Length: 429
Figure 1 (cartoon, rainbow, N blue to C red):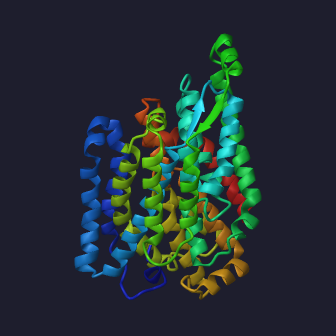
Figure 2 (cartoon, helix red, strand yellow):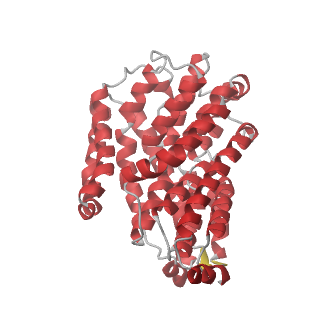
């Protein structure tokens, strides 16, 4: 998470015992909703944030890592500013559904979402499309709907531009050319998205055919879409543009927050009501990721110090390790740490933009492997990428079927996403 430390700074890595609070947070996210969902909904901040606070206190008092804490705090603030502002602005855009979606229309929405994710980010695309997707499928909504939406729109779709997903944006800020990702990953993106769309279509078609012919005919004859709240498009443009602002510090985040505030107060009340807009989903993401950002520091620092000793050198190792950790950590700092490790193996400094550009040219195999693994594996769990948990929270709020943490992994990520990750690994090397 801290480039200086990852490159071999002066501080020794913390003991892995300090990764226990992070492990406890993950275990609670996985188990509490199964044990007592109402208790978790009420007390999740008190069950998780103190664990992150304990790690932060250790870093401040025992390690004297004030600069690192400030850096992590800024990363968290940037993360929440982007996630939150996109949530608010997209909540003011109403794609009005006057009909019920069929498998063909669902396929079209997910395909559009995969492309849109590269233009407004996976968060923006998810928040714009999740509500009409829910509304159009509410007559037959099943758990596979939210799982594939997260796979395609909230994660894998955003692998073509730095705007698409936070890890790629971090790479761009470090010096990776803007169009480099598209040039080296477009056909891998196309293969993965195509496979996921085909898998979704067969699953959704099978569920659709369980309904009566009368229900199917009614769905196929109804009108579809009408977009309202277009006043929010300029605010959306401000947020996307602000992502490229590097200085002065915090200007980027305050531009995003200002756009969100303008959107919230200028959006007509009836649009927010139609969208059932509430702050609960973004509030849950904010609390949980506050704990996660703090608690995962020891695990990332230990990895940054020991990756070379662990013998991580081949593209295959980088793919599975970057991906595996991106599934359970936030994928943006995971990407940055493995980029640091990969460049360090070749005597390059991640803090030098010229060297990052050179690394993209001389070692494209490692960079493209790290890039696609961080983005795609973010879909393996709800906590791999910010929009995942937000989409889950929105669906739960609508009282629709939602996979639990472990159910999402076992019933959907393993049988449907894992084969795509294997095929991606074959083509990415």
